[in-house]
Length: 217
Image (cartoon, rainbow, N blue to C red; front, side, top):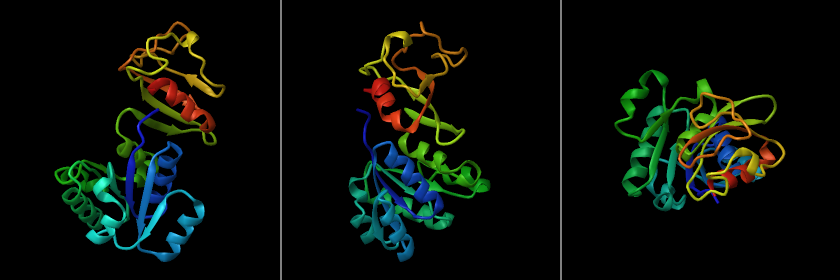
């Protein structure tokens, strides 16, 4: 199975909620910290994530959200300063936690000294935030018609499909491997899925987990 991440998201607004949905759909454990009680109720009703009501800049609230055991803390509120404060506090509390902050695009580069990654989702949507959180092994590249996802996936060494040709792998209906390992040619039945290489794959949501299991183990 692909690795499950423990993710804490500060901010349950549009970007935070949509990011949580994407991460939960990929099987990750998500906790959202949100100040607004009504927003907390809406998120709870959606059954997307564990919800903690409170100020994410408060170390006690972050501790309650489990930041010391989290793999990633993503501050995705609409306030750049607040997001940076949350990430700095999280980095102080969790020795190995990865920090992701939503910032103004114009100032993005200057903030990379303080956080591991920055996003400005107004331009590209919550998928960019989700990609930064999960890292480079699985990247959702675009939204197309409906909910179909186009992903760039790295084949892992011990994956069931590693070293096999496309014709030898029983992908579920609703899957299309688009590119070869170099990203320069359309994949063919004799294309070999080499460990360590990235392939562009189109998947329907209900088979995404099965496809990732084949490609990543």
